[in-house]
Length: 339
Image (tube, rainbow, N blue to C red; front, top):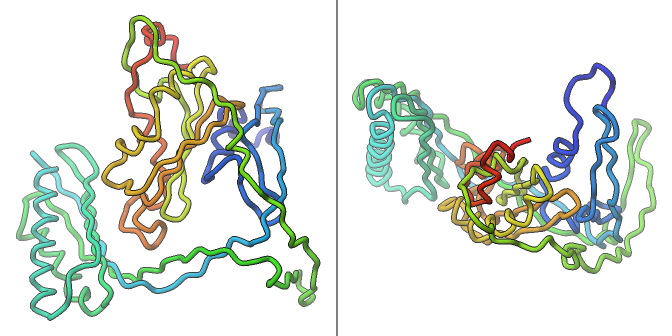
């Protein structure tokens, strides 16, 4: 629920979206003192802006803490600009490829090795496009001369180009690892100095609850069909887990789920997000909310500040997936699909 007058909307859809935000396996969401099982959660609208959430379970925790350490892993140069006019998309791509070719010649002339990574992103239609060009290199000195070189694109390349100087910054990467709880001395400091506290370190977690979930059976649409975008059938929420992206899909109506499980497979989601999705895709079922959670491994180019991607945190992945088109019973296309 929320406070009266506080704004916002509390419905099973908005609560389910939040539950699926930035998770991996919903049958084993690990925090220090419990492993959460959300696979059988149900949500019911009890009153305006009041939702009853039931069915969550707590499993024994692991005997390890999730840890992350950051480290310097090179430098990156990012160039952002716009190209406006006829065939803007083609012109922006030509600008990017021309800059990359010039930069590579400058690296070679300076005796530096090739970029460790490069990426071109074009956002917009065919009349106005935002161009993002990024490169990584282990040596900051190799990238420094390229900063001013990018500004030449505005005056000597495609007409209608508004390309600014590049921005040079360090690449700070995260290294994730597990540490046994038994080797950590937990303390609390609330302003009066460190106070030791005892925690259970034995753990006891054995197996994700997702392994025993009985999903709704997938069904091929029967009879006449129509092709609809997923946004007419689902809600979505997405986020990041390091270099992995998660996308939670929640059916707008429970009766849609069997067909959605048939149409939206892990293999199809991987193909939809190529070439960015370089790892496997896992699908987890949450029948209590008529939902599925997809985990796309090795997709975000390192994620966070390590990445050259515009959407390095996968905030828009759910909205992108909602544009996937699927075949569904024809009756769903007669104004009955979207609530």
